[in-house]
Image (tube, rainbow, N blue to C red):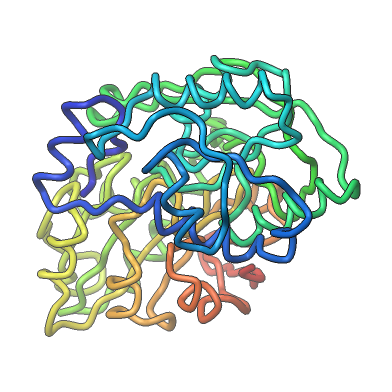
Length: 358
């Protein structure tokens, strides 16, 4: 929906009114299905009803239920904290939660470092280092940890001011640390902000020049968020939504007009229907995600409509130096597999780097 998160009852209500569908239940079930090899070896505890019980039963588990089922489907941060505190009191070996940075903060508030926790990414904001790269990876981490194969580390819990986020300002802060199973290939790092050195800004401008000179007339370009993509629109004399997705129509090399600012999935699909289209994205610093972190408006439906061959990845040399590979977590496991392989990344004017997508 392009709302930059759903922390708070009012924003959640607006998202649902716009047609948003909860993604956490499906991602929870994806985790639980992948975790099935451990089903007979562990005791599973779950919050009542939509706090985990329903998903566990749908996946064939018989969980120990904590708390009372609520009459309303909407749950609150206090519900999360209550279940987490009860799990800590019962001495569980690992708490797995589904959500984003807001949920990670709730878990931190409830348990601090009393027990290890692991996040299944289902939010918009996922700057924290407590999340597995996707639900299947979370299951692998959980199974290895519970089998005694992985240590724990202190992982940062970060969050951003959502209201500032919606106004185009990224204000992130560290809230604390939790214990998380350590498997660097399967658990993401903290998001790393881009430096603002003269060399970095010059590199971004050179990348933008390359992209702008190669604009194809009549092609719609879906431009993802970030400081690396912002100079592309600025060179065209257009204003970029720093933390949103903008859509432009190219009229030739160096020329384009704005079709939509801060577009939702529905708007993007409407604008690309019946037209050739391309997607321009930049990876998240320190994490490498090109889809599934902060740009969920570029949904699986959008990506499939555009096609893998029409994805343009841009990244500065300093950002690439901090990445071993690119990552995708679109919410569609089949699409994630299709996107894997190798992609070219525009790293400077006339310079591309080939990166593996995992």
